[in-house]
Length: 217
Image (cartoon, rainbow, N blue to C red; front, side):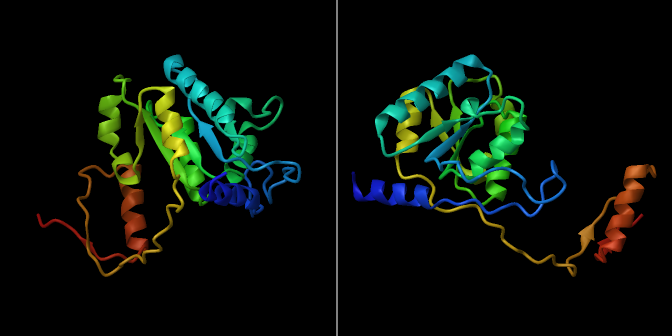
């Protein structure tokens, strides 16, 4: 085992869960059992469809598991979700993994939510995208957020194995804690019709003590 592999194994073994202060499912602190759970090297989240992509990722996970006995890779489809709150199992898997590998090819809602949750939990994330799938390419380009976060392209299971076995993200996306500058004017173009939404927006801006700059008539 190389020195980098030893450091990674040590990091994975050191992962511990910090109980959530509040969970919407139990309306209070997390009530899940954590003692018997084992941390993993990486946790893959991806949609079932299209099958061409999910099968490619599934093969990559299988190859990764046989690649080294010193690493452990979790596939969301292998989670014990029968008769349980699915998100609780997803949450535990995210909290106890070294990196969350998420397929963003089709911009699947559940995957994007889980990716956002992982970022919120302070987990390193590794978005991946199949460049051979063109159907949602225009939407992907229009969204643009992954030009900021960054992602890796793949075309085959070999590509995925290559990506995730290289040095993985060691840092997390942190909150910038930027203070709101209430002295900076907000240029607000008011709707010509006072709908409920525009009235609420106008009221919220005024209550927020922002300096509103309205267009001159």
